[in-house]
Length: 545
Image 1 (cartoon, rainbow, N blue to C red):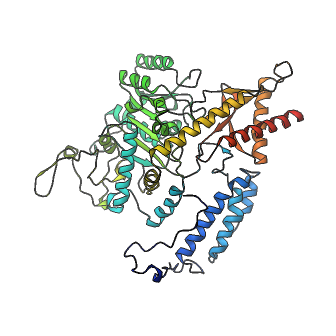
Image 2: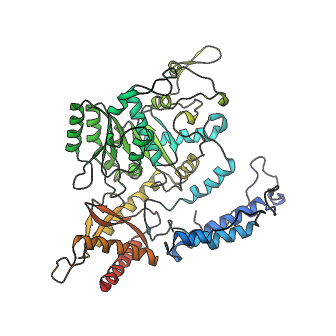
């Protein structure tokens, strides 16, 4: 569907369709006492759809970002809580005049930022549907279809990554929560404990201080948060050096593990990164899986960014070994083009995931079953029930609050389910492949610039490069510290003028400009334009310098 298509005919009530559509009167929603006006729900809905389309169609004709200031934004929205309601159309105008101009234009083809995609239309509108139904996918009883949809999406994801039929998982609000969950599972396995052991009231004691975790120094900051939230010391997370293309150094990793064993510690979890935020680098997951098996460690893979590559037959081999993981973090609100929020964790042993978070609040009215009943339950007539062979927990009432940290849970799987069904795997794969190719075209163009140097592997949709002005003989004009500042200045100038947006990072102790291609509508012409924007900004700064 295109954003500028005509509005569809009014949707019929979901109960019985009228015999004569022409005689069907639009049903109006009474706002009750919620405001000074009662606005028909269709009128409100069409106005909001028009507003969404207006915003998205206007992205290419406006600044990507800024200039904004926190104080200016605070002043713009400095207002007392209204005593009376505001007319709906005034609120629409507020969005048009105050909200829209002061957002980051993430859906723009000139946005090359932090792995935020231009969301699929189907996913955008499914968010409204999700809010209208307002299901709490914490328990099956409160969201039967929502639970079944999430189970199906989890099954699709597990199958994509090659996990066995006993695998399962849960949607989360993002990759950070998924990574925390993965490390929690590693702790439970190492200590031989889980939440289902209701009689075990003793804490883990001093043995938790002996657990060690291993990850590349390029890993996401959520792992630092995870060890703190789990009551571990920051030093228990070993930051392993990276190789020349920013993957975890396998020799240094094994040496660190051996030293920890010699010191009487317990290696607990090896973490692989399938697409770092800085460079898009992918660790050698198959080799990490071997090490995890050899040293009896939980193997967690953070595939929040690069996980979507598994859809591609062309590039899927980059993730070789991910099917050996004990847990995998996925983030559909990155390269699956979902709007925020949509994360998830997949676990090889679905029953272990359940035991790790199993609680039985009285008000959920669910029968408490013993763990030994999981494989052979009996129905009311006493006959043995054969477990459903489709995969883990198919045919069961699943209560997702018993599979993770979150209690109340939004129906986030709905947008993923509708989007995957409407588009199909092949189209998702084609979009991912195009983004990777565009990032490689950008790298090729920047290599032609004599004063720019490529940094990092340019593996996925991330391209890093550094501006280093040179004299006529090819020598560097400035020292490293000055070049660091010039690169920051270049990013700031482009941001201020609003022609494009990208970030900067630090690689090997040097400031690098970081471009991320993650927009299914982007074309090579958008890459060529970006190169021109960067070139003009660099020339202006150098003239001033």
